[in-house]
Image (cartoon, rainbow, N blue to C red; front, side, top):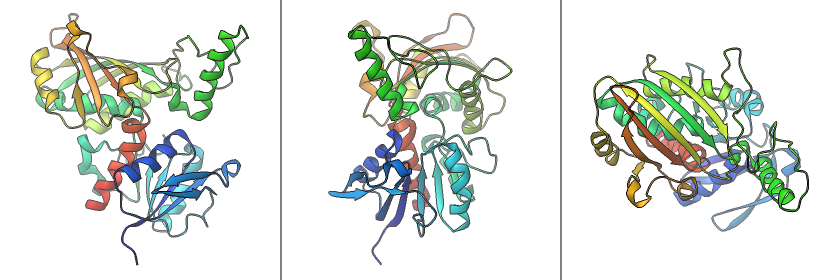
Length: 335
């Protein structure tokens, strides 16, 4: 038998799925055979992998037969239906939806932060949300040196996190407005072009959205500290790719901006871009295509004694989703 694994990508034609396929090739992941799966409407579509054009098949259990490593990026309902069945058949799943992220029996992993959790899996490993991934990459190295007590984060999230239809909607709305036509909002509750929408996912009884509470809960799980207090405000912005975040933290002891900068310059998966005098700081557009979480504007938070403020930008489809999932798989097979 040829070396490598039989790999399945579920949701292969979506924004994250296509990125997973690309990254598997880029990183020379040991693939013996790759199965590309999507909904019925994508059946027959083609994707390139290692020089070959591969047909996309309709998702069903027969198509998943024999798959050893499965990447799921087709929505929570699909994961809820198929993941337990794949695991029962002996397959290993890395799930990129919110379906299993709060399940205490399922590791929630950012490899640079808590790769040690990977070996405790029971057939499923959850990939965190992109906004959480880029933030914990930056906060965890600081947390190890001066325990973080409190996090206030405002996210400015790109439409690509909602998938290809949202990318298309923003593009169409921009065209409509420039041609003096009334833009149509189908994906989001309001026009997204030239606008900011302070809502991502549905609202809960406490006034926070599901996305905001998810960031709070995921941060505590990944960083292994249930005592961290987290308050998030999540905003959808008219940007195609790249999430940005304004983050304020309170630490257990005083940590200067210079000390934090030194810590982060040595942190895995982090790039420091912090020279405001020369207009150098992370930008959503310059984060696209990069593997790291970019941090800058590191400064004292003047509202609290042991506080720091910073700005973080990251490619939400790459490190914020697909790359993190592939890195999990790499750790999985190496262990």
